[in-house]
Image 1 (cartoon, rainbow, N blue to C red):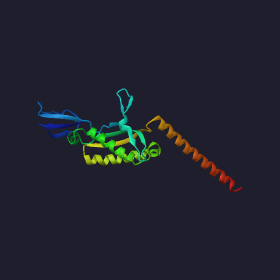
Image 2: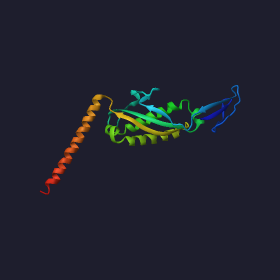
Image 3: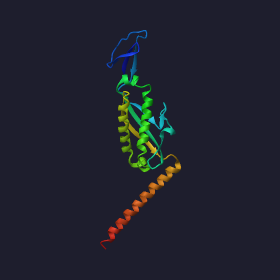
Image 4: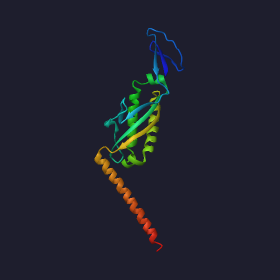
Length: 193
């Protein structure tokens, strides 16, 4: 933790080193403790309860893809405080601003991919692009926060009917690919004959 010291309400110093430090009593000086270099987390699309159970938050996880399909995506975001003074005084609620910023940028990125890519092959690319855009916005806002990582926890279709239809489509694609491979193998076997 770092201690941000205020004297008569004006910031007068930051104490970073451990040990005993004194401040003037009677409200003349106050110390606000800020956790720095500690990874903190934000959940998007779900909340983790104290007992370790997970509660979904549907309005956060529901997103529209570039081909106008709806998907449920849960994200896990890690960040840390890099500047305690800016964290305390540059904005009123930095965590809420960060969460809104993360949701906005993630929705922006997801809306540029089609549903197949979001659910299967492009998750790492979506994470990397989201992290890049969020980090750039955080530098603009300059709230004393630094983004560490953005991870997709889960990505799925919004209802069971859509999930089963998506699985059927994937099965059909794999069947078509298998049939093409078998036809190519037959062709290659028959050409020499």
